[in-house]
Length: 410
Ligand code: C2E
Ligand code: SIN
Ligand code: SIN
Ligand code: FE
Ligand code: FE
Image (tube, rainbow, N blue to C red; front, top):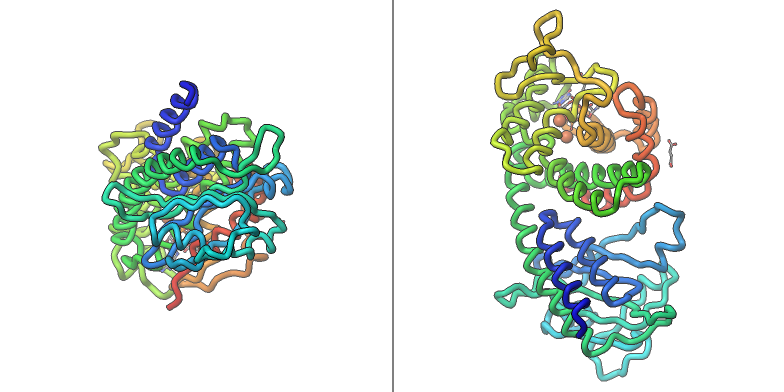
């Protein structure tokens, strides 16, 4: 193997190991590995309980059929870990499966190719290399699948035997990063389940959605601003985790208020508002850019573009105004416009979108039409108009996120 390739592999491994958030990590793994093998498409399945969950996919051909800047929207589905399907077989037997053409497999194979995805998306899967993602203890965490290798002219070719070893190397590397990211995610989810509603089922979905919406809105905003791709990727990783923790300050709010099945009184609402700076306080011993961002998002996600939100220019520790920002009543002057950090402005839209679309103990879910009208009406008052514009430009992807993180039924 030439030295350039070896260096590229080392770089990919380094890059992957820097990422802490699971979703962003998996996207990046797919991008790197597909580029390396000139694969037109690729998917990752994650093991969840006794099934494989189809969790991430990329497909250049299908992507090209979309308008520029639009993203592929796909459904997640489950595959049993048994010999019936290719991915199931690979997970069950911890074996690599390299197929030249999935429609021309010899009948001695125990598995069959499920052509539903091809039919639904009008795609032709041909060559396919599927490898297990195993950790150091030999446990299967998921399956990585590369689809339709291409030569320099773009013709579909089989994956070679030497590709197999390399994909396995990447898969092992990915499994390692995956375990770490999963651990970070688990710790965050535990913090969250202590916080909001103290009910991990309901809140898990809300925070995952708000985080996923925020990342999409940020990406749409950043692409329009011409921000460099690697900078966008880096920020997405931080934003996702920070957005998940936006309401972590609710841990300090009493259940009586938090779970009240009715409108809050104005006193109760004043108590509730404290969740913004109380959340920020949790990250006061900031050690990393991530802690800073998490504090910023918790603090500012209820400030409004027109300066009518809360908590404004407050010091989360002393609960007093930042010097020079005392209003006539001694209370902190509200923040407005770009005084509110970008991530706060983004999470504000994502949070309200999710709150309005969802049923709460104190309100019904709104129709989508009404929700979108409200978001549009609040552009320039509650929300940053540019963020609202970014929101509408990625609405299709936002809708697909709802399907990925549905609320638990009562
Ligand atoms: P949340 O339920 O996640 O709502 C987040 C934000 O979405 C709210 O921030 C508000 O800006 C918006 N929002 C939610 N529902 C509605 C609605 O029916 N109409 C409109 N126009 N906007 C809505 P806000 O107001 O600062 O509230 C922060 C948190 O305080 C809420 O988070 C919720 O946990 C709690 N809360 C607010 N009002 C009530 C209430 O009347 N009863 C109860 N039990 N909790 C409330
Ligand atoms: C309020 O309670 O004053 C506004 C919050 C909401 O509409 O949910
Ligand atoms: C709207 O303009 O309110 C909806 C936009 C859309 O569906 O794309
Ligand atoms: Fe909040
Ligand atoms: Fe929230």
